[in-house]
Length: 402
Image (cartoon, rainbow, N blue to C red):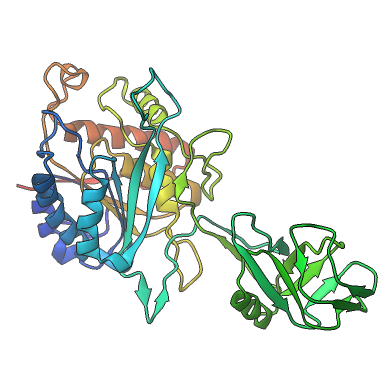
């Protein structure tokens, strides 16, 4: 097996995960999987609590061994099994390594009214192999970075009220010198009299407002060279960052697909719905061979979150593993991102060579296994991507694991 190349491996993922331990132990930066969990005869794994948990647990244990120390795993899951999966993952990865439970708004199309509740979302559990080191939480996921940061408001309406004390001389004022005991805004309350002298606060003063920073953070920022700015008598205070500072944006727990309020990646692309994914794949393949494929935009977004805390950069040369690869979306997403930033992300996809359903469009089109469909999808996606960026490596090696 060739190490650090794009691989498509046909076989039972449990066997494959065991066989690639030697080459890839501690070398996979990210795992994404969308394991089967629906009920019905079309799925290989029985959906009872015990059988499903017994199926997924050993695969996750082997997957964990493959992750780097700063590696993460994303697992798409429906409401039916999210609690089961959380219990299994807490045991395997450790509850302390749980990052979050993303909620993906998978549809904007609503048919007839459902009884009591309409399911328009699914979950993506995210765990780190090692989230805490030396008592400090690692910064593993970042949505975007602003390197042109000048100043930003401290007010955040969703936060609780805090009392923040600003040391003498730390705040610049664009109001007349003098004494102030009140503000002209109900969002900011002065807790003591402040004297403005020469455009600066002569004394320490305390403001009560919904701050995005704690008092501790304010002190830490001041040590880094941050100052503050109040432009008017409403005392709407802003942070003025020292030169060379950057602002990092963490991903929000809810991944929105509504065009009016979408989740947008650092590449300016919005995350789209399952319906959009189905339409795109059907157009690419010339037929509807998969039900409910994952959106390339969703997996691209998740991969784009990977952040290197040590270098304070977004790496683009790591390996992504998907051992329930299905339609091959993860490979498509890796190649797509590489086309955007000339990256060298590699993918390893694992899929059991299951037969398509009898009389299904895939069977009628001549596809003998799901693997054949997945390989053809990756090939066609690669051809499209090459037209946009000829430098992208779209080649992949096929292995049959028996």
